[in-house]
Length: 349
Ligand SMILES: O=C(/C=C/c1ccccc1NC(=O)c1ccccc1Oc1ccccc1)NO
Ligand SMILES: [Zn+2]
Image 1 (cartoon, protein in one colour):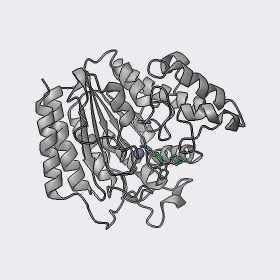
Image 2 (cartoon, helix red, strand yellow):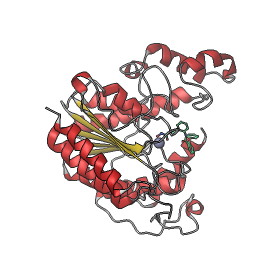
Image 3 (cartoon, helix red, strand yellow):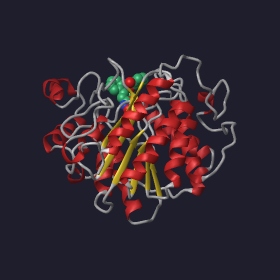
């Protein structure tokens, strides 16, 4: 888990190295209170997370930990509760800036933990800051659109709002046997009042910028026309970039930039969040680039001198070059997918 705070430090250092904070208002986050977290998460889960967060030797809680998803692939670690409540507090505060109009666009690159469940941790997500940020926005906005660009299905957020027609969730992700979390097929459309308000765009390995952004932007335009959201939340997980250890998609930051640019053109309150991204240099490149897209600034391609400069070798440039792996998404499969999604959206009353 020590990897994520280091990544966070690289992200903020690169954004500072490009002198972007001079164009932004930075807000110091306060941790979400226990009560805030209880707006989505179950009390018993939070109490357990708090308890083991203060212990050094957590092995003795192994039995109970399993109940709460805190096992080998999602280990608890000392301080996990404080870390999760600070990140979640920042996302809630970002939402509040949009609600009180002190910002048109708010960013929390340390949020985006989209797998968190109400009663358990999942996929390294201990609390679900995305759900809590959307619930906060819903206190003011009647219809909220959520887009998840992470390579993994945004299951925790989709689950939370699957029966709601006030929050429409769109997730584009790799969908293949054995790939976490395994949910998010195109036929997964939500239920009850929320039927057709969950949109899934399942893809195979190797998709590249042009195909990805064309498909996602076409879906987003249809979603805007059918749903007419008053506020938008976009999770910008960077683990779909080429060079990520997940080794799934073959994207560069330009693909996410095109999607964010489309959302910006709608001129509606927009909350941008981070998420996955395990090639730390490419993730920092991506989120620095997206911050510049929001600001309408073009960044010099040479990475500026700063404490992590060596991580950006051998090119030391902001640009990420696509890999040459094959694209397993055919024109036909993408067109068929788009037709299915269009049909589903046509069912929205
Ligand atoms: O990124 C994710 C979820 C990742 C994930 C979920 C379940 C099991 C393993 C997972 N991890 C990875 O895929 C993964 C792949 C390469 C490098 C680091 C990875 O995770 C982490 C995440 C945090 C700390 C250590 C490892 N969701 O957006
Ligand atoms: Zn991910």
